[in-house]
Image (cartoon, rainbow, N blue to C red):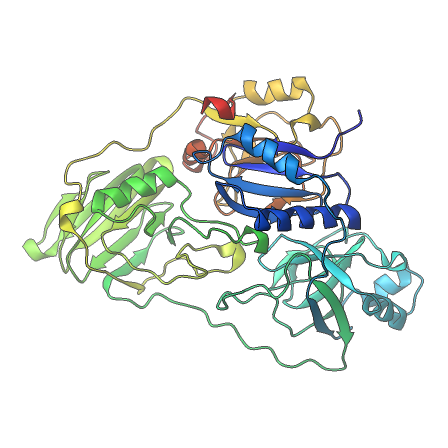
Length: 522
């Protein structure tokens, strides 16, 4: 079958991808960049964010402001007459010390000397095609054909920050210490991503890059690690993987910064509503029992999400205590201690505190371990409590997050990589979340899905809810901390409103069933 380009495919209920080809080449990359620029010059209503990749542009939009059919029509109109060359981007020079661990191995594989490898790598100008994998990681092309080697058979568990590497036709620089399978040629001291800056990424799509050989490197400054040093509420015991989460980082996907934020959006917003906070305010997300908080000033708390057993020690009332009900604002006073004793019927709960303030990175208080932003809570951490309106507190229980027997899925954008029988199997299977699930993705145990064609694609844009199917056929539903791009075919995407059901699935126990839906029916 001959594929027709361009085409617009749904990515769940809040995004589309404009596919301009299926190959990683300079012409297609240039056309994607040109379409991205055209959308900046002639913005459409409802467009919230765009993410350029090798051969497609991910467009995130608001369905209340523009319908999918209208968006599809206008995007296709914009693809007419795209200039694949475009204006030249900024030139960024990267000092490079060629002393990498794989330099000799690459030289032998390419029948070159070590000096020949470094000279070839530094001899040309590269173009940033996209950012992905980790904040600030720029995929650059194209490496001289004489220098093209595949990825390492066994990836390293740790590649140091600043490592200069190649894989196939691409080159890149690791912006921080990460796992990776590319071949290491050298290193640089230039910082590629600094979250403290207004423009945190040194490289952007379209930039031109030259590696400049040097004999020594300047020392790089150490990044400062933030802490939680406020007063008002203090952590006595953090419990199991307890983090601060809010609505997440928006508008930064093109820098490969995940949105992150609450895993169960509805439960977090219910908890905030109960204490009178703004809907997007930070909450404490817990993944198990053991959290103990002591309060240093009066406020209100509410807990929503998984069923919980929690106790408030009213030390101010001669040791009296009380059970804390779910989904209702409860007054706390100085010296009170809140303890979460157990969770059931789910794996996450949100503890909202009226007026809770938390440090931010890139405009969000959300912890994102994969990106290195902030950290889980520790004993001794403290948070400020701002003034709050007690009249907004919900003093009677409100309804919890809605539950559905089946989780709705919009097919695409690569459902054509699976035959009808495989798609039928996906919807007919009773799935369970695997023990290796986390905030990045729910890895599903059940049937193994068969690809009708290639088991990998050139990386394109992703949002939480995307259902990737790797070569082993085990689906992964991407959750809040998922990367902005991915290289496996996506059979469908979970409707945004239903993602909390997956975030609450108990590994090995909760039955998960999917049903197909259309955006027009939502």
